[in-house]
Image (cartoon, rainbow, N blue to C red; front, side, top):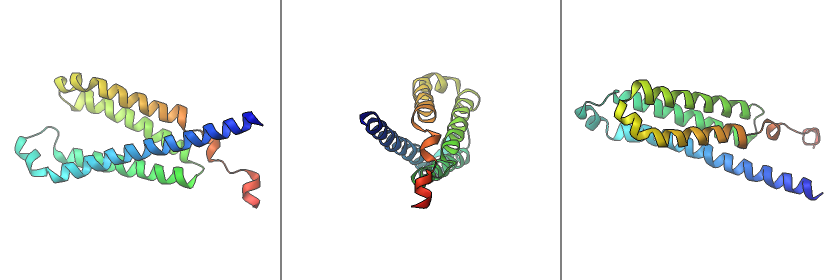
Length: 144
C-alpha cells in the first residue's frame, strides 16, 4: 500500500514538473517572438544575421508547439507523451543546427554551456518526466 502511494506521489510530482518545463519552453518561444517584434527595426539597423524574421518565426513555432504540448499535457491527451518527445527531438536538432551552421563561430563557443543545459533539460523532460502510461485512461475511468 505504501509503495502504491509513493508511486502516485512520484507520478503527481513528475506531472507538475513536466507542466512547469512545458510552460517554460512555451514562454521562451513566445518571448523570443515578442522581443523580436519589439526590437525589429533596431535589429534591422544592426544588420543581424540571420534576419529578424528567422527569430520571429522560430520563436513563434517554439511557443505554439510547446503551448499545444502543455494543453495536451493538462488534457491528458493520449498522444501527449509522443507529442512532447517529438517536440523535444525537434528542439534539440534545431538548436544544434542553429548554433553550429546558422550562428557565428564565436557565438557558438560562448553559448555552448547554455546549449548543453537546454539539451540536458529537454532530454530529461523527454525521457525522465514524461511517461506514456500516465496519459492512458484506465478502464475504471471510462465507465465512471
